[in-house]
Image (cartoon, rainbow, N blue to C red):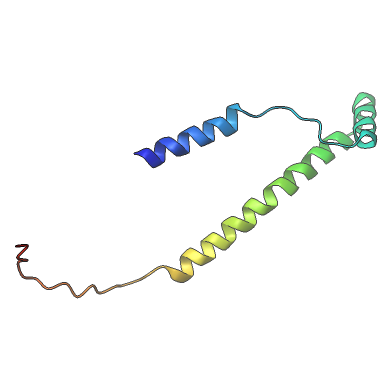
Length: 89
C-alpha cells in the first residue's frame, strides 16, 4: 500500500510540478520564433526532435528490462516442500 502511495505521489509531482523552461540557445530561440511567426513548420520539426531524443533512453531502458525479465524469469521451479505437518514448537 505504501509503495503505491509513493508511486502516486511521485507521478503526480512529475505531472503537476512541470514548469515551462527556456533551454535553447539564443540563436535557436530567435530562429524558431521567427520561423513560427512566418508560418514555417520548423517549430514542429524541432519539437518532434526533442520528443524523439527524450523518448529514446526510456525505450532503451524498457527494452533492456524486458530482455532481462525474459532471460532470468524462472520457469517450472520445483520447491521440494514436504507434505507433512510442521511442528513449530
